[in-house]
Amino acid sequence: MSRRDRAPAPATAPPRSRNVLSAVLLTAACLLLPFGALASWAAHGLTDTGRYVRTMAPLSAHPDVRRAVADAVGDGVMREAGHLTGSGPPREAVGPFVHDAARSFTRTEAYRAAWDASNRAVHDAVLRALRDDGAHGAPVTVDPAPVIARVKQQLADDHVPFAHRIPVTHTRIPVLPAEDLDRLRKGYHVLDTAAFWLPLATAVLAVCAIAVAACRRRAVTALGLGTALGGALLVLAVAIGRRLTLADLPDALHRPAAGAVYDALTATLRTVSWLLCALGLAVAAGAWITGRWSPRLAARRAARGSAGPVADPAPEPTRARA
View: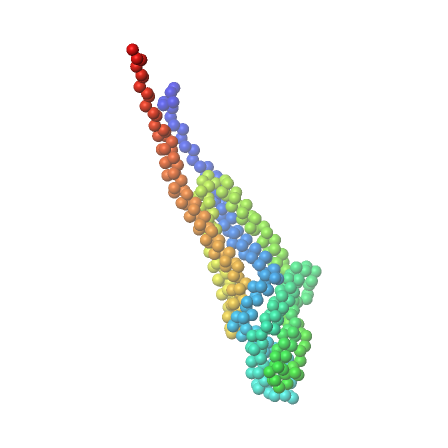
């Protein structure tokens, strides 16, 4: 039988099982992606004391934060000086001077140094409590005495009456209550573990999904779209978290300051979320464009190859001379 009489072999269809397995792996990778990014941000961004202090440092000049700090410090000084009202000027007369001095204090270099030192001390105390499994029953506290001492000196320099009699006592203000430490400690250990394994699992699942796919270009396109969708969901989660965090605050006057702190802490997470959206869309668009143009380029190359080079005409035979 000649080659012309042979029937052409039918094209084999892509295996259905490979497509299903690739789709399952891609779905799992895209679902784990935002959780992995969130865990990595929390474990590596929030638990680094130096990075935390550098992130919080610019907030010392934020108007809403300075206003909240001045109110808190002024109220603390007035509580400490409450027993002086019997032998000194009335509380209503001293109050404006104290709050003006507190607001003036928030514009000094001493305040910025105290802000950085307080943030470092609180962050170190919280991290020690979360990482120490043997510490039980002791709340995380902070001592406001250094800040009150600086405000007292500011009041004395402004010649406020009885400023030198304001007591500076070392008290412990709880930052994390003892009953919440065990729960937070377990959550911290889970987060620390997830920050390593979730991104690794996401990468492995994505690579396996592309490897087993019958059409890898379609798998890459789906992965890019899933990455963009995961980044968009992460942006939405950050926005919802901000709204819920501010809604739970009892003091509505300090919500702008809390919002500024939240925005500063989540700035890196928002940047990563938008980068995931842009990267996913770029990968999907690149895969789609190459899928549209690669068959045309292959057809053009095949046409050029089938035409072949044009043969030179055979030379005419020369006649022998007589």
